[in-house]
Image (cartoon, rainbow, N blue to C red; front, side, top):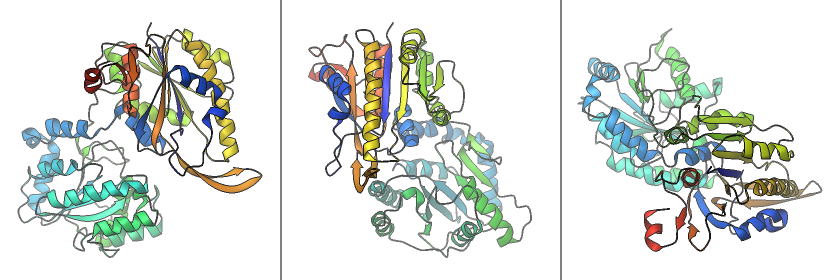
Length: 481
């Protein structure tokens, strides 16, 4: 039986220049020995937190998949048969209100899909505004945000203008009076900050160390305020929630327009996770290469061992952004003492009947450098146990899904602060006696390729892009294993 064990030490990365150095060889001698007898390479990741890291690991860069689906299944000639299309068309024809489109600017290609969508409507003499909801988590993302925003400005239809730009996480889940007042000021009066030079504003926010997802809203024009005849559309490519924005619309709408029970025409591209019923064009986007679909296709079973609070999120991404229970994926929550009991490890690997086993371990970086070193030493013992079970039997991959950048005191007795910087690159160790160094090589890649590699090891003819390659220039160029 081909079996692959993936142990993720999430948070572990390759030290960047200027980072406080922790000697992995000293803290993790077993991993050091594995490194000497295994393949080693690195993967690129922009993630610094587990949510984005899970998505990239299970689905990779989803933009192309999503845009293809939108083009082939939603925004095409048959869109005129969609009930939402008729509702929006009738609303736009029957009044003089504006058309507001909300998007998350994560890729330049999104504007091509928005333009194609808008081309299906009669927008003559209609004011259309595009509002940007920033989701990016690190200040280093501002470079790409500037590039995407400038691209949107130059490629958007001439009758469409950018209106508001705001961090998607700026408002809290339960809006307080202060947030509602700011919401009113921005959405209904356009009296918040105005920046037509968005690049200058983004650079200012970067220098102020404000995460894009937490940016206080600002206007690019002072004419995009909401009126009572407006139509709203979330051009979302993922099933997500915008309820805190919608709450701001609703409660302020009643006050601004003196309406007790407003019926606000809000639509979405993909069905939203919302407490209210919002009409949508499509229920979901299909991800054929999700873990659940791949396991089903090849009749394989996987076990994912994770913290209880992470299981729901892992399941969501493993199933292709859908909440469901796949018969091919089982979950086990980590309990106290789980890794200390060698029998747990042996029974799961040897007797569980799983083709792929993922140990989803997250490093605790909330205390001190000394605590972190002790934690690495503890993980090293666990790795030694797992390596012993897998030796000369199964494929073993040791890696991480995201790095970390954290300032911590050296110890409880030493409050000197130092910064660990593991951004951008994570390590990958691979060991399997069936893959000798004389014939195979491990190449760098992205975190999604780690999952593809695992599937390739348990199903060699799957044709997925694997990091394990036979030696030879042509094989490495074209990704053949």
